[in-house]
Image 1 (cartoon, helix red, strand yellow):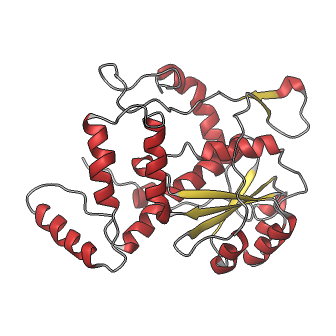
Image 2 (cartoon, helix red, strand yellow):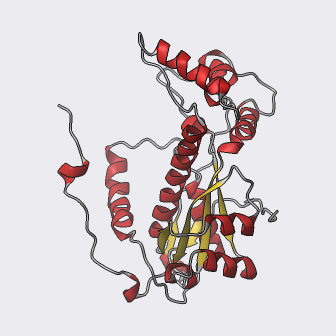
Image 3 (tube, helix red, strand yellow):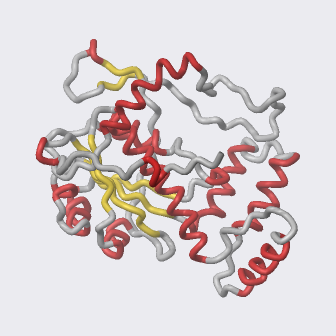
Length: 300
């Protein structure tokens, strides 16, 4: 089993946008502390409000939209990188940004493995089929979908929300996390209970809207990979905002990658993300997208 290193850092307030830049060109990163308040805390009418909440109003739009659009346009899948290194503090900040991605019921069923150990990194490059996006990258991150961790993460989440058990989850939030969510997420390895749930949900769905998944093992796989993909995209956008490039790789040998970092059987590799700074020849073509009408459907 690969040794896991806990991410025990804090978000930096002053992070150079590029390695080697002077003090006058530092990029200010908003300090965003995690919301660890209990869910049963008295909330003002209209929802939760706290010092860490950022409201995207008109003034926010004027400040944030230009930078977001630049990051979005700058993110391209780069296949060849130069020799530039990503400072550790920037890489950590990008990984921490990735954990702010939305997640179903906030269960966060994924793990991000930043492979730094030279021997493991070399094996990972080979498991990525030796493609230049892996062999020339400054950093490699394995995005793992962990459907098997939902119970563990739920327990951790409830511990945070109740301040280590000092308070209780009450009302709708308590009912959801203590009763409904465990029922929805339960997965019978033999499939018998899953079939009974399918019949039950289908029957109830005849008369009212109802949650219909995840039920089967394949449902749970899709669910976990969806959450992992959201974190992966957030990571790549953060890398772009920090002035670095990335490439998500799906053409990989998952079996070998799981062995490299010691992932258990139920864990699955969603993708490997390479990161660095591009060489001009690392961008293979102009950006091509289908027409908006092919992808965007407006229901009037």
